[in-house]
Amino acid sequence: MKFDDKKKVRKVAGENIVIMQSDNTVDMTKVVALNESAMMVYERLTGRDFTVADVTRVLTDEYEVDEATALRDAEALVASMRKEHLIID
Amino acid sequence: METATLSIGGIGVTLTGDANVALAMRLPGMAVFEQPATDGIVVRLDETLAQPSCRWLHSFDLEANGAKCHFGVGEDGCHYHVFGDNVVLRYDSCQPDTVACSTVGDPWLLRYVLWTAYGMATLHRGVVPVHSSVVVCEGKAVLCLGESGTGKSTHTRLWCENIEGAYLLNDDSPIVRVEPDGVYAYGSPWSGKTPCFRQERYPVAAFLRIVQRPENTIKHLGTIEAFTALQPSCPPVLAHDEGCMDMIVDFISAVIGQVPVYRLGCLPDADAARLSHDTIFPARQ
Image 1 (cartoon, chains in turn red, yellow):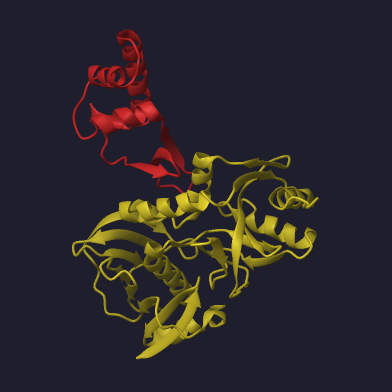
Image 2 (tube, chains in turn red, brown):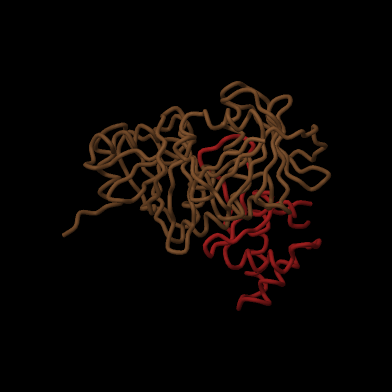
């Protein structure tokens, strides 16, 4: 899997967001906000193919977290990023 | 060659061309903004422009007459807007202060084309026409945001009727600028169905995203919600181009760092106006 390079992460007043472009006129723009760990994973893995194990490694490298917890967090993070189409196959 | 000069949003606008210059200056409200201009942007009207070969980014129908419009990037790297069958607007970011446009027959379309040209050529200066109805109160501007039909104009009318000294600055597309000492709203020649054309400038006190609700409530929005409230009110066509979107994001970031954005759930009544007014301008002790 990889990050969709068409979904650009932008900085808005200190927050990292991805703007979900809609073709219809909408009342509110949909954005996905990346928290600190999601942004860390994005920065480390963008532009290349990666696996859940790679995500887990980023989390264990950067945070004081055991392997099992990191794996669980990595799976959850990948699932939510897939749901928002930030991650594609 | 004909020439006319204006000042819109504090930016000099020089129109050059033939018949379209006179047609532009006869559009409602345009004469209010006539002023000598030595710098700023140049809109070259009545140019001969061929249909461009483009990578199209966005297509839409014009509300007023259903004409198909397209926005894209040409093989020459320029941005193109095509309105209906034969009106072409070209913007070359290497000459960021100049826009070229072919001859427009319909005055209404010319008005829209000029709005597009202005938005295109001033974006790199952090100048954005924001779709809103604006009221002035206590020397400051309050901008009501929302899609057509959500009650922007109704809410500003309620301010004018119920808040002492409040009056309308613009009813559709004021110009908003981030300046060294704050964020300012300017009147413009684009005011929707309401002929309200004022060559005036005020610091922005707040933005109100209007939402129809069975009761009146107001909420101060955090960064992300404030962004999602403001972004659809910036020229939506430009959001389809990454470079333009970067500039719009910079603009919104600067704006929401300085000016509060609220979501107003409201009924079309006087209490809604008092609630938003008293929140933005708390009574002095």
